[in-house]
Length: 154
Image (tube, rainbow, N blue to C red):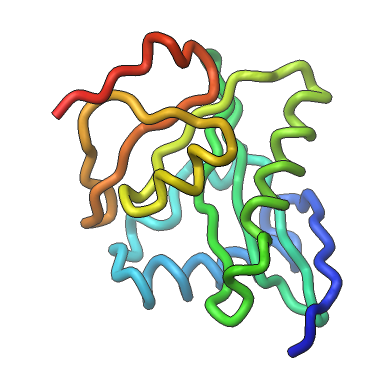
């Protein structure tokens, strides 16, 4: 695989591309990271806006946006192992945040696996609150607004 062009699209839930994204999520979260399968899929998948990264004719990355009253939640960020380290997650997050901003939303929230905090900090997020165990792994809540009041609790 060379440095293929990456295309990022918003796709409807249960479209062919979104189903490929769901399969990629299973590959990364359930098989690789051992998240319980019943926790990986949830009701938010029906209402979320799903994004995919395409390369070499395949879905190689995905994330979803959930629009809540207080903020837009970025979640289920996954990149196929062979495509990691190429900036795909960063490109997907930038694209998704731009999409939400065009709809007038500019407050973003996520829960990051604790070993990925530095990556999200580089995107302008700050961690706050206590460590959370999600899918058997430690996470931290992060946001890109009200940063001055973001306090970690241990």
